[in-house]
Image 1 (cartoon, rainbow, N blue to C red):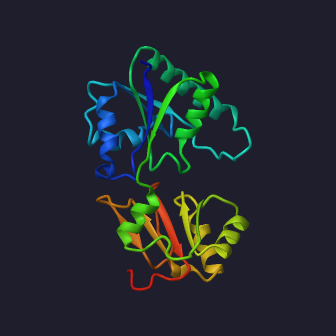
Image 2 (tube, rainbow, N blue to C red):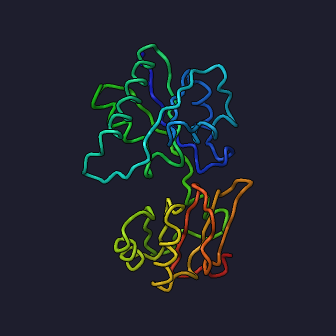
Length: 246
């Protein structure tokens, strides 16, 4: 029987939000290959699962994945491609040794995740490789739960976009959709608040940082831009208002 790579969504940061299926799979894997965003840093995904699963007797590899913009249909830069290929090669070598391998990724693997880039790279090297995906709780779902604000109701239309999009793309999204979830806001929060103010939507937005964790911060009054936002930051803009939900 061929060994399998398990690409596992860790959820938004709270280790208790790992699914039972994720925990069971992590426990049975002999090796973990975890992505990290800086060469000298530590893997956030690994730190999340390590709070619920003992990794001391597993082979653990933290591999650098450059955090650079990737556009659909356009080949990424050489540094990014090389990182994907390095990770894929390492995983294939572990699978060839008969080991079950886990690749933890933040949130849900289906939403702006490193997991699918790795998957495509693996298929390019070995089309018959066995890979399984495990959904995780998304950041927007966790933020909705923590604020008691629905993402969408009835016939409302939803958009989920990175806050790093251009001003015009953000403006168009704010015009066209009823609820807008802005991800990756920590580096561009000043600009996003200006665009929301321009669209008269500042009072329709809520900022959530580290949803569900001890350091959680929820800000509903964005007339002043939150200072020092954490990487785990998401914004929900609900044009139909927060109603009696908050």
